[in-house]
Image (cartoon, rainbow over all chains, first blue to last red):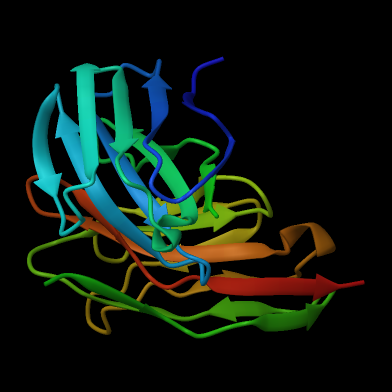
Length: 113
Length: 112
């Protein structure tokens, strides 16, 4: 299936831990994104990579670090997790030139306890 | 900067009722406009889009028309079903990076 897949789907961890979320797309898109959705469903962009190059880096704590080993993968590493990091994190991809909108992964629900 | 304003929810309707979810936007240049739908426990799915003024996007009985003069992209459906219960997001894409900016989402519940 052509899709954006992210793992894990659920992640429960203690404060202070370091965790990673992985994302892969097989759509041949050239741009990938990370969004954070809070408890009120509000979506905020965090990062965007175009062909492995960082093009959007919104104001997020330095504890969040994206890594794109190739244009089909964009991982999110979070250091020293805090309670406020609890949210659903969505990966997405798009073909910028085509302007066809984004394809989203199914989300990773992160719970920090 | 670019922004999208959606009508606040939640919206509760009976099956077969008419649906309107208002969406207005602020953007420089000529954005593309989208409606996304998020079913419970799932990611966002593209519902419909319009890339220029007066374009009408449609899918699954939903429609929205890109109105440049009123900077609006209201979502409508003539007869909603229980299966339409979801959160609906209006969004715009603009600029060289084509970053997608979302509205705050509108929770729709359709009762049988």
